[in-house]
Image 1 (cartoon, rainbow, N blue to C red):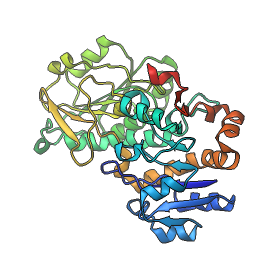
Image 2: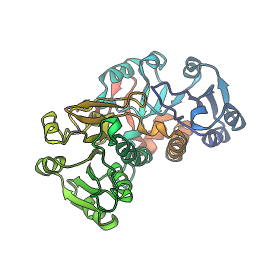
Image 3: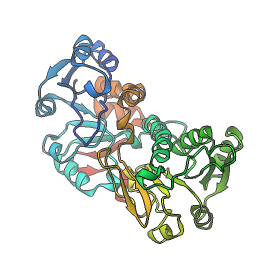
Image 4: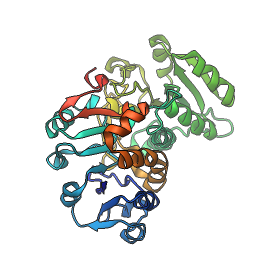
Length: 357
């Protein structure tokens, strides 16, 4: 199979879909790989690294799309790429169709085979291709939230860890999944008071067992959310419904109950966000303020740490890329029911019902 690796062109997206090591595995399996010039540069991988791994370099994104049987990306195609996808071509990437009708319509019209990282599951019921980026985003949520709590950036002026004689900051985390646990780990490590809310009692029991004493678990309800937002310094949204839009757990009217300078980091922004006032931002212009509440809603948070993110992503996606390349998408998905869950749009037909919810 001919595999294409284009350079990501979404605003400030510095990741690349496959490391040179991953390319080496593909060429070792007798596949041909074309990499767009400079695709890996921001992640720390030069064109020479890819050439040494057996890849061919092409100067433009158009040429990569035109020659490849399968395009492997990090982020969903943006408008400039819509016309490049063609009928029957496999596109394997994060899509998040549920929150982007324009993208959905474009990929239906292209008649490409769209396989989404975020809906591939495993025999544990988890999402293995989403997990490493959720780990990165969960940890970054605290890092970014702590920064935007600083007064020069319109935050409360609170140091999350506090100092002797001063109460530490309070972090409210919505969702006890991968994002929530990683965020709690980072916030607890800084010394903050952490409240993590979820509706899954088994998950809360697990978190309660493994986390230090400054992480407090509570059942998620509107009452508890409304109670905690009144004095939270940093609120992190990390709720995920696979393939579907995130539920709105904090509504616009609830902002008035928050203290001025409170910071919201909505990691669920790719799926529409779990805060009603969420709208996607970029690393170039990451925040906006509504009712004196700072919103950080960057849709590709892991893109800010591309070296770490690219390696972490390739670690989990490469086995599936090899299956698709070795068997073709039909046989690969037929033989692997977990990969089959990644099929979202096939030759003009939406095959993942969650997209429509």
